[in-house]
Image 1: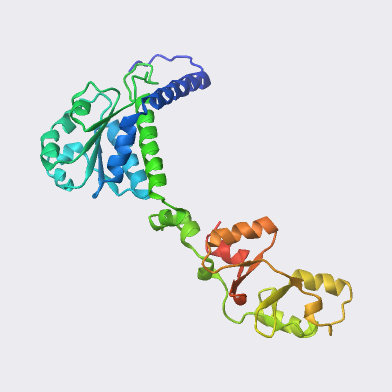
Image 2 (image 1 turned 90 degrees about the vertical axis):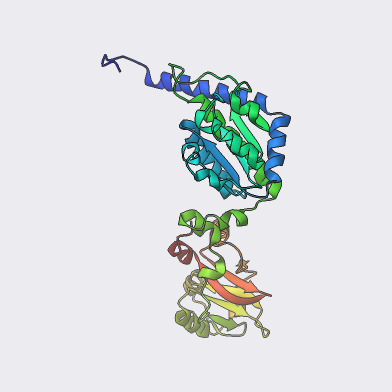
Length: 324
């Protein structure tokens, strides 16, 4: 590597690299044909797992493709081709599908595995720049990227080719996701950890208040309602009828406005309450409750079941639970 300093335009050089990779993606689109359809159908029919393999940079991309498959409803894992030749090939079993990635289509490490793959009768999908290599010729389905120019000015470091491979893997995963009818609830089951897991898995019933709910009947006076609100410590009172069905809500904000008007404390709360308050079901995602609060500029929601109060949830409960 030379030590001579070079003056370059950093921004323009970056733009040139990105434009080169964009052209590789345009070329990839032209490669989508009946082979891509066959690959999707083969993976959908798979009774086992999708096993992705690749060496070097192709291996790094392969790991991401396998991870995306696994998180979107297609059981998959990555198998290092070098380790496969020393025992890890036992990961492959009848019913699996193998996706072999090699830009040149000539990866020695994967070529060594081909006799065993054929003996096991495992369908192989190759991903390479064209169909001239050993791997695409041996594959049941040969997906191609096209002969794109690498963004590396030397034409050596995998850049445009790895971008195109990654995009092709994402395209496969998204098509399969749609074909399987994969939902956000399904997605949540494979993402239980972290902020994403909390957003997808936490339900309203998991964080709502259920004890000592501040409930009053419609004929209750404002004075008595204030005592119930103070005891409930939720900043509101829920007004119900004789059958305990929710009729309305009276909040701290309502109280401040009524006191400013010198409101008579003996008046029935039914005359002061807000009718048809916003409600939510306990089975709904907590993140949906937060969205509803933001849409209506409110900080609390009543949780009802068959028109009867079962809980109260506030924006503070959601933030405390890490839902955002």
